[in-house]
Image (cartoon, rainbow, N blue to C red; front, side, top):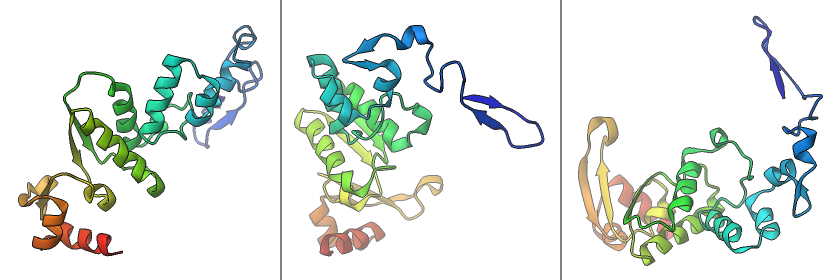
Length: 191
């Protein structure tokens, strides 16, 4: 796309006539991988790419992206279009095979469709099963309910500092705590 700034009026975006919006020169586009030009490869979502690229290394990378709930993003999608939670899950996917001992995630369910929360929880469980420690700052009750240990901070957490109002397992919180999180978690479990 060619963006033209019209100063006092809204800018105009027009399709590049030279590449017809494909982002590459004809010399680059004449090369194919698995029958696809580079612009076609970059438009594939992770799930579709997994069907095309089945050799060991690409398949492993695509499987990690799927395991963190990112099968819907395209290979050429700009990072600036991803939510904070999606960027965190992308970072986890790229580091899943490293020797990192601890992962700290801030709202990894952000930007995630509710139907994909189970995928996120399975990914977190996989990290723990592989001997990693996972610390998650989260407000999503479906994620909180699956935690091994909860540290509830409130009221007025964040900029007000907050205090630790509960520590324990989700069942302990439901049975013994009266915090706002406990009340919401109790209602979530009963639904």
